[in-house]
Length: 142
Image 1: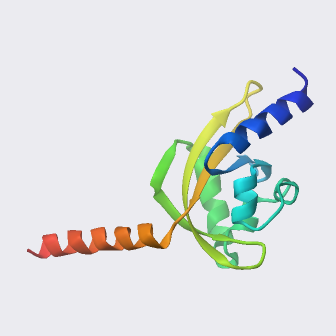
Image 2: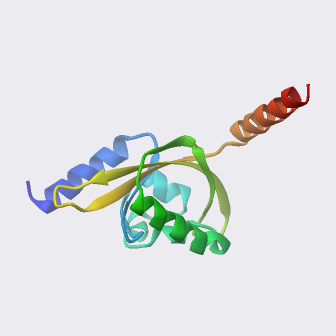
Image 3: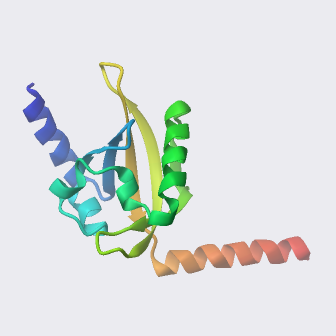
């Protein structure tokens, strides 16, 4: 299968999944994105590809994110939803609360990419998380 056909097939698969998805290379460059990711961050898919993933991080945390990304590259392991609750940054310079799951993917030629599955954190799930934390603190005090 040609590279172009593989790219088209991969894009079609990404569009079928119910998550915002980014595929990022080891340098932090977004190589693939689906429509849900583009919509979440207020970009077109064609605009997201060739950007760095730090474009989607609030300006004050971009350096920290880059160092965390470098650490993940050195010691990659899957991170499930619920572990990485972060703030994203939209094209219109708005903060959006997101939950991110990461998984390293190893290519045939030895190259590594990271697949990021992203969900927008809804107000109700944020409230549930806060209530659970409050409940745990109250149980500790009891």
